[in-house]
Length: 122
Picture 1 (cartoon, helix red, strand yellow):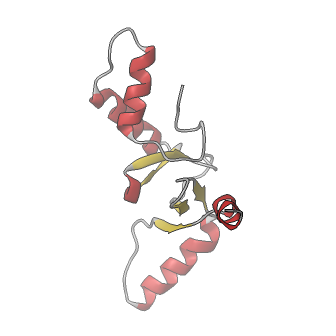
Picture 2: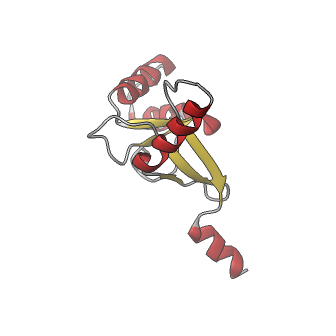
């Protein structure tokens, strides 16, 4: 079964729905999947990657934090970054503009080391 934690690749709600339909006696309704995703998000077990409209398992579900990711444009792997380094920089930059941050999510798109290496060998 493909799950959010099966790989570092973000998974969309409809892909999860399709996977569940393969294993269920009857096809689950989309609201069921969205309620489950909302529960996982609310409890800090997954992150939503807005630019991909997809979800990925949290590397550190034990403490509340925002998700910041490096996303490979070639293989779609999402690498969660250390928020202790990023959030203070975002807060400081916002503070310089007298802006109060409620939440922050950083998504940086580029090429992962594996894809860079593979492209050099082509």
